[in-house]
Image (tube, rainbow, N blue to C red):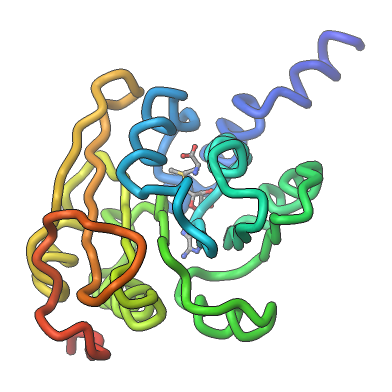
Amino acid sequence: MLFLDQLRNDTRVQFLHGFLRHPQQVGSVVPSSRFLERRIIKMAKVSQARVVVELGPGTGGTTRALLDSMRPDARLLSIEISDRFVRGLGRIKDERFTPRHGNALFLSEYLDEYGLPAPDVVISGIPFSTMKADLGGQIITSVWNELAPGGLFVAYQFRDRVCSLGTRLLGGCDVGVELLNVPPMRVYRWQKPGNGNGNGNGNGNGNGGPIQPPV
Ligand SMILES: C[S@@+](CC[C@H](N)C(=O)[O-])C[C@H]1O[C@@H](n2cnc3c(N)ncnc32)[C@H](O)[C@@H]1O
């Protein structure tokens, strides 16, 4: 019984269970490694941000790593589509943290709901490669329009769909690779033009104004 309870509480088992229930939505069999977490945090300049948004926290490994690196006065909004995963996120007790059950597509509504200003960084682990291209384009457009000037959009993905979609909509990006993850993962970063958190080399879309979703 004790062994079964331990298994049930293991976040890796919960993650695998989530994958088996909704493989396309979860998109990965195991959570991100601590090496990938570190790379994401560095590329996203999390320690400098005041408002961080996470899309697809899953069982919360990346969420805890973000909180460990964030300023004491920063805020983290994590949007997760799986109700089971969101229930698990409720175990993270940190007054800087707000878990939200919902779809990344409605980022703008959730920021309003919690009275949060434009995020300095949006970090996404959601699987763009398994969703329809027009939905992926709408999510990227919404992220870009909500980001603060100079803000960073960081997406970690195994496949390059987010790169092609993002490059078409936002312009060029910086790319990092983390081999110490199953599977090895690419981390893409775009910086919105304007003064703010980041100083990456992404080209952005030129003027930092709102963009339209692809048709
Ligand atoms: C690859 S997992 C990443 C989990 C965790 N961040 C990690 O790195 O271990 C992707 C997560 O995105 C969630 N997800 C997929 N589509 C989503 C959407 N449209 N909005 C919010 N969450 C979504 C899935 O339920 C899953 O928890």
